[in-house]
Length: 100
Ligand SMILES: [Zn+2]
Image (cartoon, rainbow, N blue to C red; front, side, top):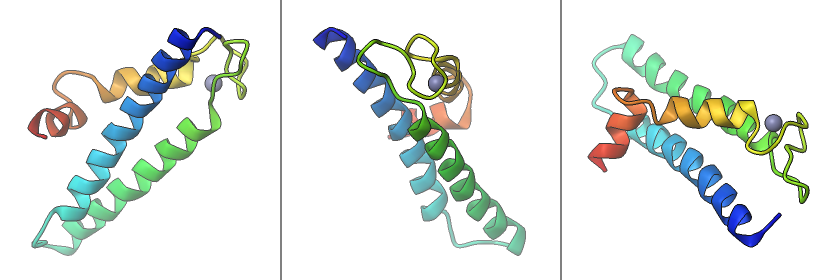
């Protein structure tokens, strides 16, 4: 993999983790909580971010430019889908990113 490709892949992964960090931080800083349901939703956001973070962690580029987990050309379908979903205009992830 060429240095420029490696840098692009690092930026892609970093952008995904930044979106996840922002969502996790936003949920953690919400308060005061109005109800038990709101607290449960806050905890669910943290759990969902942890799930996505684990999936992203499984998929990584090899020196041959493929995903070491699923074998697809990098970025694989999983990473591409997660990245596109996090950047989808109008999503809460995009809204949080625009507010920061
Ligand atoms: Zn993959």
